[in-house]
Length: 295
Image (tube, rainbow, N blue to C red; front, side, top):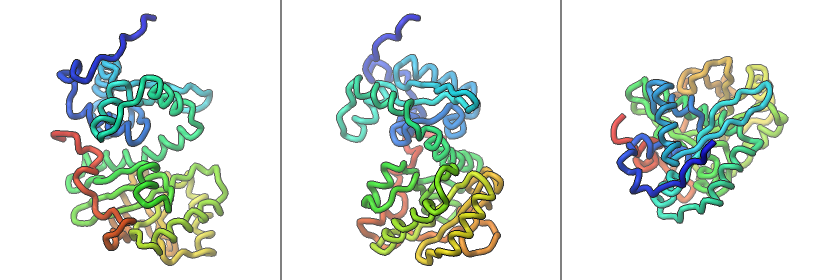
């Protein structure tokens, strides 16, 4: 098979790039990797159109892809930054572009990561919110931060899987996400709340901690454990796939509040007082789709 030509410069391909392509680059830079299905849900009306566009961007060396084949497991096509998208995102934030060797190592690290399935599942939750917002005017995911960005933004007090701000009409709901795939003891999930309690005590926001769990049974086990070790300073809500696949919908069960389920917008949430540990309401520059000229 002939090797693809070396990447040209951003100026060479600039006439081929569209606002949506820059949005893809920004999403991959922040969230490491997204599947074709996820990118379709966020940005395209047709899976075929999405595949064709991504293939063009790959030929331009703007993005790249891999498939990690494993027996008995889903094998989605995963997209990562290519040389030109990596150069664009680094320069756009005032950084130094990665060398070709550094980029190859970054791509291989994603491919080899034992946490890849967990990362894709975390991204699925936020992708579902973005997809919901495409279909429901008046709703929007105005902030979507990765684990890395969230940890840094909150002074390394916490290390959730992600943070978002959801807007539904006049209601703005900040939240922290903890995605559980059933590989840890329930006690470990409860222990994660200690860092959130510390953040809250030091002036952090009053955001709910959301646990997305693999089954209703595991969700019930977590609620029983939370009843034994209540965290009155922290709002905790849970869901599982059996409660529904739309995280914006009435799928969230508050700890200590019976079995009634609430929508994401109905969960108690407050940005708190301005301070070093409270980023406050989402700014336009934080919108995950800020680079789109039109929707």
